[in-house]
Structure formats: structure tokens, C-alpha cells
Length: 532
Image 1 (cartoon, rainbow, N blue to C red):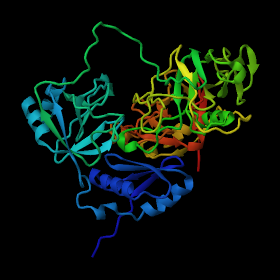
Image 2 (cartoon, rainbow, N blue to C red):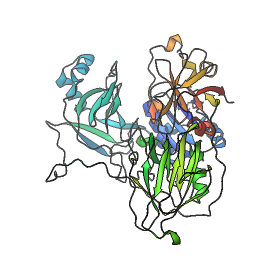
Image 3 (cartoon, rainbow, N blue to C red):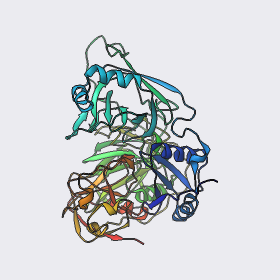
Image 4 (cartoon, rainbow, N blue to C red):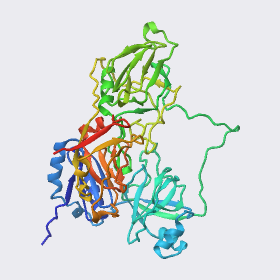
């Protein structure tokens, strides 16, 4: 007689995602593979982690339908080996020279050579994407657990090979990290120009091979040493309106609709922090809603290049500014937000610092022609380093060839919130008073906030006594997740958040309030209200 299927514990994650608690990694991988092969209606992404699967959907109604289907689902019944399945074998060359090699030997009660023998003799399996593109958690069968460092490093070099818990991984780029580093590798694990950017995919078999030295192929050095500045990420064109950034304020980035659906590669959706403002700016100038725009903090100035016949419109450009309430002028003449602004050769549009809100958006008719596309998007992801670099004074901004519609006057959609609505959990039970520990207080936005997250200062959010010191296995995150570190200070994740995280999420801001959250400036205060 077949045993009945035990219904999994399913948590709402905001209004457009679900987190499924599962007993172990093999079960999580079986669910991931099944949902990847046979997506549910409205499914946007699926992210496996150590003991969970995060399912991102496109609407609240899709979430409700998915909850009903998943309660009786049993994806493990279709696979005798849910972790490995059919897989490639990937070899990673490692020089075992890591600073934590001796520490790991002590933790495991063996020698340095014993650590190396165990690491190279184990066949590891790609399990799930991590906090950076190409960072794939690899799991071995019957491997001893290795504790993370008590104090994480602020910078782990690219190519570092680390251990944490039952996992091993290669850091694809320089980034903070708390794993025990046992070696270095020159094997490239992330290539954004490739059809499949991540070298190690979930399900791949991974073999670590000991080598004596790192061998890297580098381009020939120039005949004369030089240190040129980084090239502009904006592609040149001789037949499109061109402008020059003469002032970029505190930060100016290129953003579009982002790159959703790649969580399994460790790639977060990114995109414009205030998506509504970016879409309205595009609508005003007649662009498609996902065309590339400039996202700015602190003000900017754009001057239309000369050299064309302004009389026939050869050098003219049309722009629109939305988002933060800020002064906008064209050649010193005051202009409004969400209005099409005609700029002739030599004209300058200036956006001043925000009086209300934080981020301004500038759309150019035709979109923005830009190098640095990764996975179909030119959005700059500041956490992972994907996309074009931040813009600098003197960089060109060249109109693209997006399909056009007539220009129109719009309504600026800015909303700076006093209250953000949240759905409790998925880990509110880890905290004394549950979600009330968040909703019953006023919070102040820290100056250290950025596109990764809004850092909040205020009263300490305390864990329950039985959770104090407990480590949460890494699990999927979404924009809107309010994560609480052991120090008790919440962080509200924005568009450039890590795909997975190891701190509990007390609540999730609903998708409908994310654009407003992105306009919270340092020093602003905000409260949270539970959304039913």
C-alpha cells in the first residue's frame, strides 16, 4: 500500500511568491527539477536551496492556485535520484593554498593533506545558485559539516574555493563571505557572454582536482604601459540623437526591466528600483515600458551634442524626467515632471537634488543604446557587478532604436510611504512577538542603504530564546524580504538583493509597495503594517 503524501509546509512570501519547507536537499532538488520541467501557470522563477524551494509567480491569483496544487504534489515520486539526475561532469582545478586550510583540518580532526584528499576524492553535485552569479552550492555525499568563520571576511578574492556546512563552492568574483577558504582556482565559473553563463549548473557532477599552480591565459601586455580610464558603457552611433552627461550627481546607472527568471544561476532580477517611475518616463517619450533609462540619485545634467542641423531635427532629442520630486530645467527654464521635453543641439536638461523621494528617472526617446547586456538586460546590478558600470561625467548617452509611439504628458507616480504593507513570514516565528516586533515600531532609513537594501535603525528585533544562536540554512529571497541579522537590525531588500540568504525573514513587503520603498531617502522614517 502506498504511503499517503505528507502535505509540505508552504509559506506566503509577500503577494507573489511561496516558500516550500522540505525535509532535505535531495527533496528540494527534486521539487526544483519538476517545477523547472513543468512550470505552474504564472510561474516566473524557481529557486532551490538547502531545504526549501522558492516559487515566484506573476500574480496573487497564481499564488493561490499554486498553493492548492503544491499541497498534494509529490515531485520525488518521479525520480530515484533527485539530486543528480542526468548530469555533466565539470572539473575544477584547485591550488590548495587557502588561509583556512589548517583551521578546517583542526575542525575535522585530520591533517591538511587529509582535507585535500577528502575534497578531491569526493564527487560533488551542483545543488543550487547562491548569492552571486556563478556561485553554485555543491554538495557531497556523507561529507562532514564545516562551520563558517566566526567573523566573515569583508573581501574574499575571485577564484577562492570554500567550504561551509556540507557545501563547497568557488567564488566567481571578489565579494564578502564567511566560508572557510581552502584553496584558489583559475577555472572560470561565470562567463556572462556565454549561452550558459554559469559553468556549474544544478545537477552537474563536480570534481575538484589538485594542481600545483594557477595557470591563467592573459592578453599580451601593451608595448607601452598605460592606465586608460574605463570605456563608456554607452555604445556610439553616428545616426542617432546623442547627449553627454556633464554631471552625474551621487550615482547614475542604466536600468531597464531587469533580468527575471534566472535565480537558479544566482542572478537576481535587478532592474529599475522604482519600476513605475521608469515605465512612466518611457511612456511619456513613446518608448516601450522596459526600455533602458537613467536612474539617478543627487541630480544630473545632460547636454545635446552639436554637429547636426537643428533645423531638420538631426540632433534633437526628446527626454522625460520622473520619480523623485526635484527641480527640472532646460537651459535654465523650469519644466515639469512626466512631460516630454524637446532638446535641440546644445541644450542642457538639468535635474536637481530631490526635495521629496530619492531616485529620478530620465528616459530618452528611442531608449538608450548601451553595451554590457547580460541575459537580455543592460541593468546595472551593483551587488553582482553585472551590466554596465556606473556612468561618469563626460559619458555619452545615445538614443537607441526602440519602437516608438507618440509622446504624451503623464502623471508622475512617485509615492514616498509613511507605511509599507507586509505579509508576515516566512520566518516570523523565529522572533519574540512575531511580526509585531516589526509592525509595532517606527524605523529610520540608514545612510548605508543602497539598491541591495534599505537598512533600518531603531529598536532591536529579538529572536526567541530557542532560536538564539541557531543558523538558518540558506533559502531563497525576493525583493521586499525584510531580513534580520543576529544584531537585530532589519534590512529591506530591493532589486539588487542576493538570490539566497542565511538570515531569517520576519516579513515581506508586498510587490505593490516596492516602488515606494525604493524612494525612501536616508533619514526618512517608515512604519510597517500587516497585509492580510
